[in-house]
Amino acid sequence: MDEAKKAWLEADEQMRGHTVAGALDIRLVDIDDDGIVLRMPITNAVRQPMGLLHGGVSMVLAESAASMHSCWKLDMTRFYPVGIEINGTHLRSATDGHVLAKAHVVRKSRTLVVHQIDLYHEESGDHLCTSRVTNLIRERRDTPAAV
Image (cartoon, rainbow, N blue to C red; front, side, top):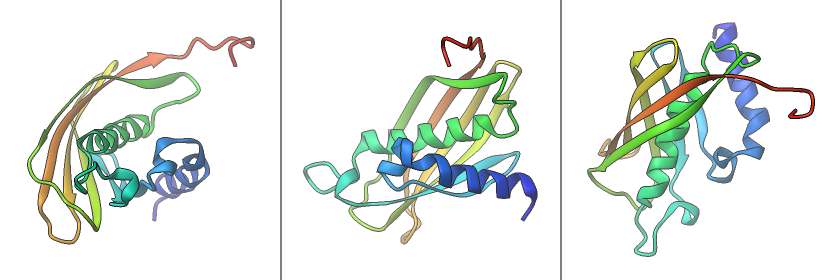
């Protein structure tokens, strides 16, 4: 495993307790220059009242994948991504097992990163949702008082 990927896996483990990823048990599976894969179990925490995977949680998973990948090789001491647009089409649902979010870069510029994210039911291979997320890359303007 290359050093950048190893560092990301370690950072993900350290940060997850303070994020929605920790609350929903979203795990980083793989990351490289082209994309990212996240995995999430379907538990009561992510189901809607009829027992199905909640559509809003699918959007959280898609946004998490795109936002995490927008940080890949970004100098986070100088810049940070902010989600500015998300859409999703729910194709199927699931009631148990795991969801895989597979995101890839559609376009990346100096200030914008657009990802397509496809969610799959890991056990059946069913395509659950397709989504697009746009992140704006902002310059940090931290001051000692703001930190």
